[in-house]
Length: 206
Image (cartoon, rainbow, N blue to C red; front, side, top):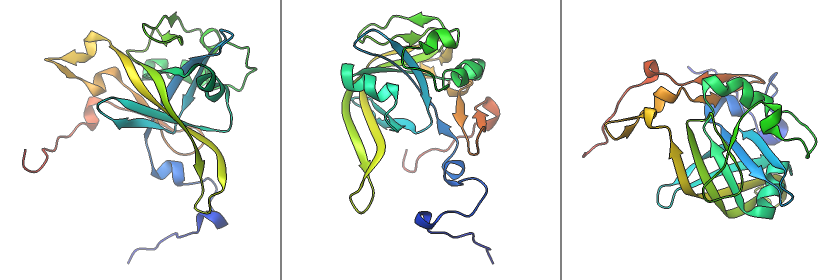
């Protein structure tokens, strides 16, 4: 018989650390670069991030609180997603620091910025994959009672995608070859994707 730890989220989980982001894990990292109308560059990782549509490609990240990235996408309507890899993990973590708005996280993390083709925000030159995105929606989340939450889902259409050709074999992108990192639970847990995690399943009827 299963011994369940059950709780009402509104009443608290009664554990040492919230299990929610450890259960829905590991999560892809939204390493988002933006720029303000004044030309101040920003780079920040978001653990609430994912792909939501194929054609056109729509990706989204959620800002918990009104952070610089949110302010910038409201101003300019553009952002870039940069793939975070094991090689770039420390730089990604450095870019998460809470610093004044005038601080350029590219410089803070000692990262080279690469001009984008179709949007104003720069790309992380060392990242092997980047999506240049135009904002399609900014949605403030609501609770079941209709109360507006201090959380905003930013959705954007990828209008230009850049992939290091070394990650493509026989026309197929090799997910593990980039060694992407993903956010786990707890205050500091991350996971790296490697070939040893690979297994395949064919869809029924294919």
